[in-house]
Figure 1 (tube, rainbow, N blue to C red):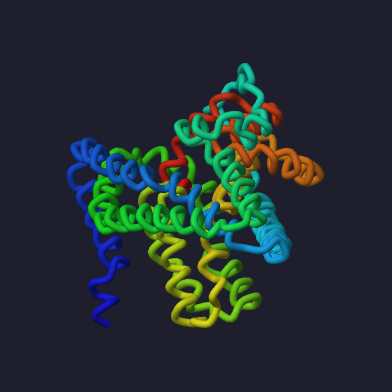
Figure 2: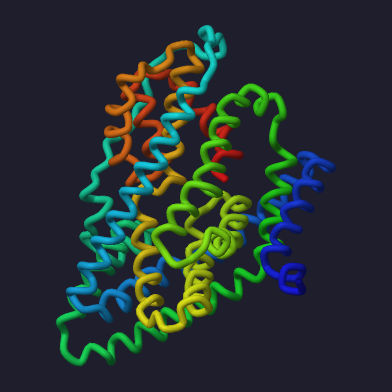
Length: 368
């Protein structure tokens, strides 16, 4: 009971509640608090990319080729299962939009001009140090994986792995210090958001919000935990419990990248308590979480719901027969992130440029 009362989760929730209260009470006066929140997020980001690089090198380098192949097969199958469940839910929610006449808020205009995104440039670094400097996460991850796989066959690799392991643990320790101020960062971000959000804009987007929140809630609290409870020895309750710190932090910061260390640490604790003999668990966790972050996760793919909503909003709902093609076109684009995928999808669907502003506005809530 004491842990529940004074633990990190309780502190984060308290910071979020106080932030909403202060934001609603003082309004736009709380906008300056965003500086504190931004500083907190940047502190978290400071060590995460180097940590991902070294942890992947150590993780893959410590495996054999047989175990690495087994891990890739099982993780790949599970990722496809999650995509299938999540995209099915997105399509189902898109079919719930009520009938609506064409809106006067938008005027068809020029299509968005979006430069083509090269997946080769995104994933294949010509200079890994430049990729680190520019936070090109997919490129850093690919370089780290290749380096780790090459280490598998190197004799006397233990000396290198020991050094990288110490660096990885040190970076994780630094991040742990920053995580302790999460309640303060959450308070500042929440207060600034609550104080500057326009209530009229929220009302205009209520249909999208209801569908989006319903979709995310079902996936987060029902579908994915049930899948994990079936495929792993962990119960439904254990999966939700180990997820709560990361869920609340991601919700309040609106940033998935900053919760990677929290996910890694909490998952490792869960395995130590429930499966103390699972000696390989730490290596698998250090590998899987950073790697899967670079694939289109459901936090990104649920943004596809806005494309269906945008077509409905201007009075031209997308025919059901076009859904498969839209999903197939969107999936590769989400490797590059939401900010790239959404403008591109609006363009190829022939939707008005005004919708991008509406998407950015709705992102204050939906990104969380």
